[in-house]
Image (cartoon, rainbow, N blue to C red; front, side):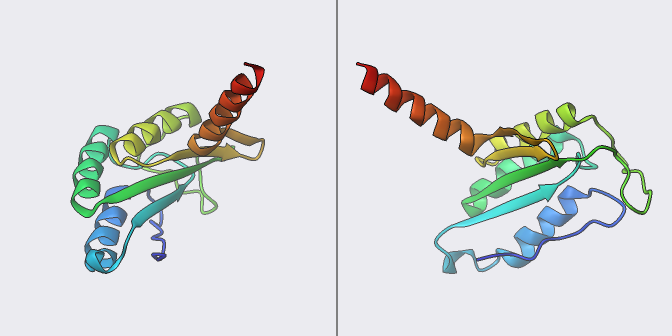
Length: 139
């Protein structure tokens, strides 16, 4: 089941978007076998990371829900309308914040940009499995 993405015009009001998704789109949670949210973003949320992590942890447990983040790093922190977000961070700080949020949500983190993939929980697991298989075959 896919939920319509929420666009926060001129801001990155993650808490508002998450509340709306949880309160509106997941109210019939018992009708679905598994549920997850995918956040596609280019920057850090307006709210502090620890606040989001605490909320996400509580919500995800209550709904048996996972939050996955796909962070796309762009070259500048200003959107096409030249609106500067309420909270700014460099790409590494943004990635660290989302990794903390994803951990609280028992989800997965993926970080990519125009240059390719910087980090991906899925790719890390696949590489680990390949290395294990290689080690077993060497033995």
